[in-house]
Amino acid sequence: MSPRNMITHLGSIFATFIFIYQFRSSIEKYSQKLLTFVYPYIQITFKEFTGEILVRSEAYSAIEAYLSSTSSLHAKRLKADMVKNNPSLVLSMDGHEEFVDEFQGVKLWWKFTEEKRLYKLTFHKKHWDLIIGPYLKHVLKQGKAIQVKNRQRKLYTNNGSNWSHVVFEHPATFQTLAMEPDRKEEIVEDLVNFSGSGEFYSRIGRAWKRVYLLYGPPGTGKSTMIAAMANLLGYDIYDLELTAIKDNAELRKLLIETSSKSIIVVEDIDCSLDLTGQMKYPRQKGNKDGPKTSHVTLSGLLNFIDGFWSACGGERLVVFTTNFVEELDPALIRKGRMDKHIHLSYCGFEAFKVLAKNYWKIECHDLFPKIQDLLNEVNTTPADVAEHLMPTSASGDPRTCLESLILALESAKQAKHKELCCEEETP
Image (cartoon, rainbow, N blue to C red):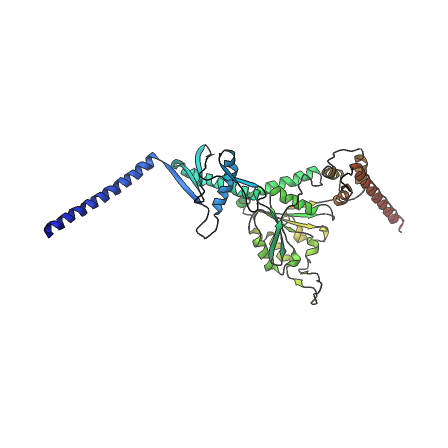
């Protein structure tokens, strides 16, 4: 073949390749359109790890929690595991298991691929706006709520500017709290309303927080109520020790590091803060330099309650306790700064009945009327009553404990009567 013919032949071959390539591209283009028309479904993949090395995707974790609660009722293949910070078994979809979910009448499909550690969501393209918007928002919100509910809650305390924690396992509930039922119901309703009011706080332009002041004599259950609050709402507790904080800047640092869905507690505020503006550390053994001065000021504390820094995070309660409310600065406890004042007083008969049920599982007894009369005349705290109701042995009986309580109340009544007589005789 002559060079000229060879060039002509190669040109023909090249032209044929170009034609085949263009034809193939056209076929693929139209086949994709045809496939879209025939198979009008969309897939979204949620991988376990984000672009950052070994950083678990929050979306993946929320979806996993959501599907663990919904798919466990319908899926045929599940896997069980113990997850860190979760006290119970967690069920989730097994590899290649498919789960059909429904939202506002629309069906969609979830599939878990164990080898690649990802979830695939499949749905019809005509529902794009519904799935991408309201549905995924619903899944992430529900998943995060389930994560909070299932997690092991923590009790934090500060050592200077750092938090340390232990597992929070206090068993107190509002059912076991020694208080009049109507007052408990009022407080529970207030707490539940607060926890579900995130959109309301956002709409009115206020930080999603609520500040409580618990006050009353020692032994009336202030710390127990805080534990009951945490158990009711599923919140962590940050026990803030003001005397261990160097200054206002350190206070702000601690506040920023607290998480949402938590209770920040400042106990015995009357003992923690010198209302002239400074606090002092107690002298420690071996400290030759004398007491150290903390420069956390009253204004710093007020800014912590309702200033700019109080808006860091969200869905938090701030709880102050005091035995002597009359000694606190009015600027600290005024309405608007302390949203709710709760007076925890001496043990009444209704509170006593709660304690009797807690300790002895009894709701009535022939000694109850006598105890009711004495409680109307004598001031005694729930802690003092509980001390007498505590069984002294496994074979103890309620009558013995109730009689012990009656003797203590009668003794307190006589002491009170004697004190009144002495006051009358004094000129």
